[in-house]
Length: 231
Ligand SMILES: [Zn+2]
Ligand SMILES: [Zn+2]
Image (cartoon, rainbow, N blue to C red):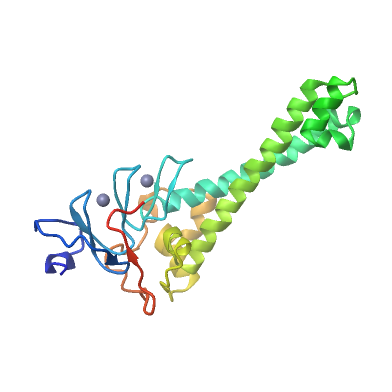
């Protein structure tokens, strides 16, 4: 049984020695055996960060941190500006390639291995051109696609009101609030400015309740169990 003390809005240390080590339903306070406290729904332990993360979305290897309640806002702005920077760089990069490299090249050089072979066999394309083409052309393209896909993924997750963990595991949590309310819960009341002017947190603090989730409809039919020590 979950002790009554967890009704308070904070993570509660595990005092009892005898914790039931079987699996707990997803939508319920559950004990973290590593941190030795009770945690609310959506709070998961990350082995890499070495702690429990409120509203854990995923562990981001680019940010070298977990994305959760307190930094989702910055993660979204980071992705947005990464996409802007990629679009800007691709535009100028492609123009640069067309202006200075394309005259000596053919469509066959768009295949890296083929252009490498052609340059060895004495075509107009030099090895430097092949290198620039591969690094600038394909590197930029891959980075842009990666950023764009991550951004779309994060926006989708925000709009449907599910964490990355819930989307991945197909957990039936419903967030009936409007999209504006969902945006405000992450970016604060002045959410419109957060993307264009990354306003500091104190100007527009987020208004999400990571303990009770009273505005959400928890999974009814399917309330999957989670392991006590999450991935
Ligand atoms: Zn933990
Ligand atoms: Zn982590």
